[in-house]
Length: 297
Image (tube, rainbow, N blue to C red):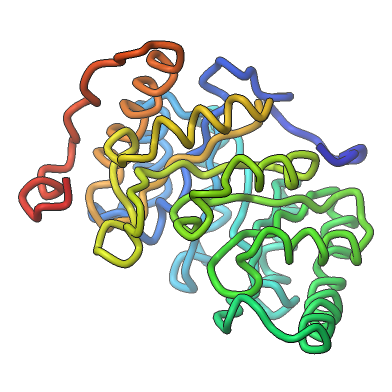
C-alpha cells in the first residue's frame, strides 16, 4: 500500500477477518426504497456495516451534512466519497462539507473515458498526459484535506488498471491508489491474478460482485455475490495475492438496498467459509426474488 502518512481512519486499519473490513457501496442512488440519511444509517447499522462509501447524484448533495451526522450517530465511518475528476462546483461543495466535518475519506474518481482501451503510442502518451493535467488539481485538494484519491476503473481506456498505474506514477503522489471493481472487470477475469500482482502495492479497495464470464454482454453484469460461476476462483486469487484491505459490497440494482447488501454479505460469508473447502456447498439463496424470476441465475 502507498505511504498514507497524513491520513486518518476513524476505525484504524481494517481487521482482515473482521466486519470493519467491509464497505457498503453504490447505495444512495440505487436504493429502491429511496431511504433518507437517517433510515440509511439505521439500515447499514442493522446489517453490521461499519464502513460506508457515499455515492450520490445532484439531488442528494443538499442532504450531505445530514448524511454525515446520521452516520456518526450510527457509529459508521465514511470510508469514501464518489468524487468528480475536476474541481467543479459539486467537488468544491464536497470538499467544504468534509472539511467542516473534520473528515478525510478516500475520494474515488473516474474520468468516465469510454473510448477504445488501446491506441497508438503517441495517442496513448497524450491520454496519460491529459489525465495527469485533469487530476492534478484534485490530488492537490486531497492533499490539503488529508485524504487519499482512488482511481476507479469504469470501463474504457481509464478503466484499464495498467493505464491507471501509468497515471498514478506520473502524478507522483503517495496519497493516490487504485479502487478495483469486479463489476467493471469482466474483460480482466482471465488475467485477474496477474493484474493483482501489478496493482497490489497501490490497491485501496476491491469491490466484489457475482461474476459470470461475459456477464456484461449477457445481462448478468451484476449478480448476487456467490452466484457467479467465477466467484470462488476470483476470490481465491484475491486471497492468494496477499490483499487484506477493504472489500466493498454493492447495492447498485434499484432493488431494496437492505436486501441487496444482505445477500452480498451472505455471499461473502459463504466465500470466506468455503475458501479452503473442496466442496463449500450451495451458495445462499438470494434475498432479491427477481434474480431467478428473470432467469439471471
